[in-house]
Structures are given as structure tokens and as C-alpha cells.
Length: 236
Image (cartoon, rainbow, N blue to C red; front, side, top):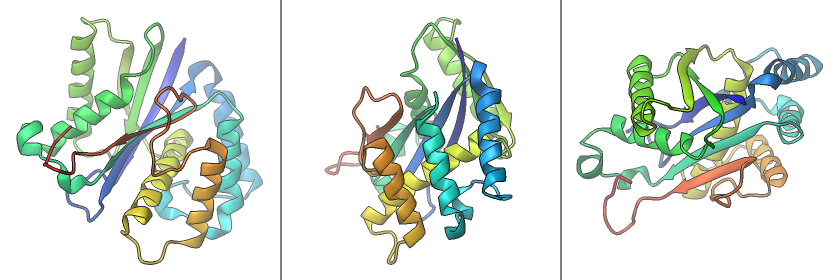
């Protein structure tokens, strides 16, 4: 069986005034891709939404649409997984990542993708505007080929434009998780009411608080909570 993984990230720059970062993907069975894509497109038409589903374009007036997207996700054979990195200021890239935030990004991508079962093929898609995208794609593909002795289940890594609706759904989920975590961390003085209502709805449907990790064996909606050691600067 073949799956398409649409990967996106939030607050992933080393110095962006955010205490957290998140990288995640929506996993789509390739055989159901077109049908599910049309379901999202039809929801957009039904709710008269002409804008991108990006978290930084969140609109209170489109809250019913966002909730309908959450229902669509949980009622169909889609999966979500992310790594939530808290306390970015504790990361010691010099000691653990060869002095490079970029190397930390590779590590997070590796641990994000690794739990996918062998026996299936995976096509990984990244945002075309992803910083240093081509270099990252080549490096990540090289890592998995080496790990699997040239027979990686991740058969391709390629770029797509963010107009793809599965990218946008990933962005919405990753954005919500990052936002809730930043609210809990005290990054915002006055959280946005509509955003918090959407966060609460996603928590109700998933059964998990977004700022906390899920059970490790959770497959439908999985959050891996990565926290650097508070007693010393660490990179992993």
C-alpha cells in the first residue's frame, strides 16, 4: 500500500521569539487521495471559503468550516503525526547537532517519519517554499536510504506548492498545536477566542490536550512531546 505524507512545520526557525516549534504531516492513502481531496474542496465550496487554510490566516468567521474539516479528518482514513519541541532555548546545537540548527531539523524529520511501518511505500511532500528545500530533501532521502541499506520505504521526497489542500490541513493542525503550546508557555497575553475555541474542538475530537504528548501507540492523531532536559542544554 502506498501513502502520501504532506509535511509542514511551524516556528521552526532558530530565533523567532517562539518558545516551541512543531513539525508534522497528514498521511493520506494514495488510493483514496482524489476522493478525500474532493471532500475538502467541496467543504470549501459549501462554506464559501476562498482563502488558504493556513493558521496565520485564521478567521473567526470561518470557525464552522474549520470544525467541519476536523470532523472530515476524524471520520475518514487520514492520520496525523507531529513532533512538538518545547523550550527551544534549551537546545544545545553545539554539543549535540554539530553546531547546526539545520542538523536538528534533520533529526526531527527522521524521528517524525521513522515510526511508519515497513511493508508500505511512502511519498513525502514538502512545501516548495521550505527554506533550503532541495538540500534538505537530498539529505533526508540519503539518511533513510542508508538506514534501510538502499531499500528505503520512503520512495520519494519532493516539493509541492502550498495550494495543495492536504498541506493546508497539516498547517492548520500544526498551527493549532503550536499556538496552544505557546499559550500555555505564556507567549501571548490575550489568546484569540476563536482560535482557542477551535483548539478546544480539536482536543475534544482527538481526546488529547494539544500541548501534551499522546499515547505512543496512537496512530490517528499522534503528538510526540520532545522536551530538552531542564538541568542542562541538550540537543536531543
